[in-house]
Each structure stands twice: as structure tokens, then as C-alpha cells.
Amino acid sequence: MNRIIKRFTGVFAAAAVAPALLAGTAQADDANTAYFSNGVMQCAMTGEGTVGCDLTNPMQIQYSFLPFLFSVRDIVIDQMSLPAHPTFMSGTSRTLPGGNPTLYDVRTGDGQWGPFIEHAGARCEAGFHGSFTCRAKGRSFSIYSGIISA
Image (spheres, rainbow, N blue to C red):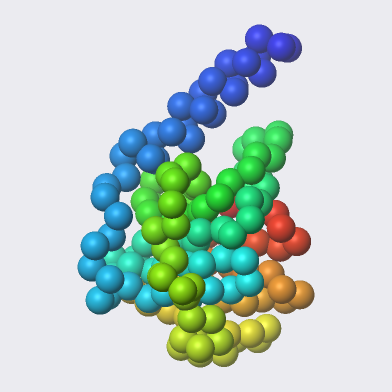
């Protein structure tokens, strides 16, 4: 059993590093990027439909295919072939100097539980009891009570 856990951990570690290795350089076209904040998240939606959030405090992330949680400082949806994932990159590439405007300030509409923003095919919205969800490229992540579900 211990051998299986070690193998699984090794496979997962390789899978976690792959997005950082495969990701391109940071989006340079800020003119077509929508920035906003929601609670402890500073988020950006690029003109090509990528959505990601820097977290001011680490949060735990859970995947339905993993039996454990781990801590992350950011979350991004940048590829259709991967679930929402952390990039493990240093810095706050999705945060404007002085912080992003609030979701309420840049919303494009109001949903059942709160405001939402849609940009370049991506959508993020405030939800029930302080939850927050983003969808892009056929993938999504949700945050509730300090836990990210992807």
C-alpha cells in the first residue's frame, strides 16, 4: 500500500509541474485583460479566455480524483486539456499595482446570488454564502470556505 501511495505521489508531482513547464509567458496584452478582485482573490481574464486568480493567503485545493488536499497560492484555467490548476509560479501576475477593482465595480451583470463578469468566453461569479466560481475553456473551479474545488 505504501508503494502505491509513493507512486501516486510521484505521478501527481509530475502532473502538477507540467502546466508550469507547458505554460507560455505571462499575458502581455493588458489592454484586453479584465482585472477584478473578490475577497482574498486578485483575478484576471485574458483576451484569449484564460482566467486565473492570485490568492492573498494560501488555500487548500481538492480534486475529485485525489484523496488529499494541498496548499496553493494561485489557480488558473488556461488549457482545455487540464483541470483548473495552480501554476506554482512566484509573484502575483494577475494583480495590478495597488490591487484590482472589485467584482462589483467591473461586473457585466447580476446573477441569482451576486455579480458576475464575462470576458472572452470566461465567466466568474459570486455565489451563495460567499462562494465564488470561474468557468473557462470547458473547465471550472469553485471556492467555498477557503477550499478550492477543481
